[in-house]
Length: 215
Image (tube, rainbow, N blue to C red):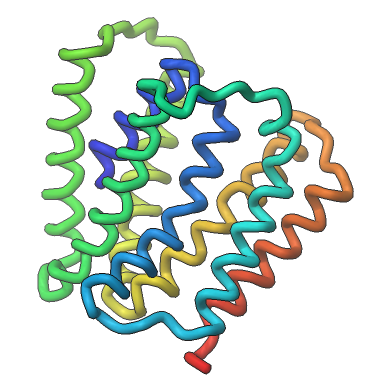
């Protein structure tokens, strides 16, 4: 999940896919998860779940709208294929967490991070370039990726997948673009329009609705 998703996401953006489009593709992951569970006969998401996911996705579109305007995307482009494959890897990896429910969380996290490291290392060897400048920015980015993304966020995701339905857990990912936009506003003084704030409210309402008990 981590190795393929992150490697393919970085590759897609490096090949010219706008970050806003990549974020929008990421917001499709909860819908893909619900559809895949339905196709595999592992429970049918409730009406409130589907409505919540769709409302939340609409909210994400409104939040990302400023970044989507003027973004030119070739639908058959290499970057788009990499982006879609990244979301597919994230979806399948998330669903696979259910099979690890009986394993110790720390052991499972260690094994998966080692696997992600091997995949990312292979990706660097094939399509990347190894550069290390030792700057503070590089060390800070590395610390964030390791501690926050790989340890805390992934560990929390695995814990939630063991105690809740996959669709309910992945619905929380709809809040990623709105929260990122809020951080950009606070840290980099980027503007937040009324349309984006409306999208934030819709995304939050969609997540709350999607996580309700089945109707």
